[in-house]
Length: 570
Image (cartoon, rainbow, N blue to C red; front, side, top):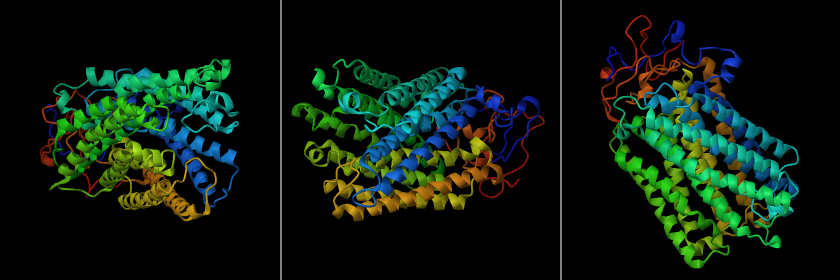
């Protein structure tokens, strides 16, 4: 460990003089934030912008559910097309893809490996500006006429028949891809070159392993999306036959190219959340995680196999039956690394000293919902069953159980686990638990009826439906309202905590990671001396023997012990 004086790890707040200000207090002006190169501040900028897009996407989702309250629909079909496209585009490209890496990955990876910042701080800030530019372009496309193709932009509809802002939306997605690529480059270089002394590959937190695998997928897959969107724009502008069969093109080629990116993109969305769940399960069961190397390698395996299964989206296309069999088999194989993670998380919980705090509730919620999403994915991987439920509400339910039940639950769990570390303030635990339970109930009421709708043959993306489906749609809309209330409560108390919350301890969970051995919030350069890692990734020790790394032992040493469970009163 560091040569720093041993200090109990539960420290409430540290006041430093001069250059020892933490990153939140080091320059208050707007300019200091907009020109910052501090990875922690950039993560906060992402948190604000990503949350705003998430709220907007959620509003579109509620409008979709309001339309489906009655069989004939509340809005014209063309308006409904624009609503579900706007919801999909915002949620996929402006929330699900960037949320965990850009916010929690940006904030935590340098601290977790003992670095002062990411390898390329200026590029990190540039990635946020590019993300914001992409968001502005997409918002203009949505509100200045809208997009009616669906978030998948299938051709030839998007190239020849749609009268909406397809080109602008394609440009926005093209630009957003550069933000993801720059973030992926930063993560890979940082993890390879900036680990603290003693931080070997197999001492890395599993959160870092998950983001490393995600960064590799981003680097390899995102350029394919850029090429696909570019070809779509070229065909739309020049009428050169690439995808449109009327001009000698092949629409199935678009599907192959799009899903070659978009199925790995599912793991861009969910792999970082899996890394969060590994931290939640280990730190809140106070137990060395079971099968550390298997979980780490399973993240890489998911990244590799994710590139081999795109064809299961084309079972009802012109794809060969024999090729379909190969993709079906590979789609079952890709489930194995995810199953390894779930098994090892469950084994870690066994006989653990479990703290049922809000982050753990989100972790358990992730496991339950992701299991349903994963198991129903096996239905879609089977050729015969997929023919029955392809392009029905069954697919919507499966996708949302994986993406919302997985990625969103993981993101919210991580946000609660590290909220005190990010802001220096604690949230009210009672309200947080209540909100999580409301979200869990609302989510299942929203999407479980959609499995039944899909099994009964209700196609997705239809503004109207037969009256016999109304009861299930009403249940789904009621669930969406409950889910929205739960998320609204979460937003409210997190904002409330910024002013009224207790001061956060350095290590409220008694966890061994480096991020818990610096102040809450951390200083500008994370540590005041370079930490030397001599312990394993999840080596729990008695809290009295743990050190807060990097304190020089002179004035400024933290002296105020933590009250009760988490933080201290102001």
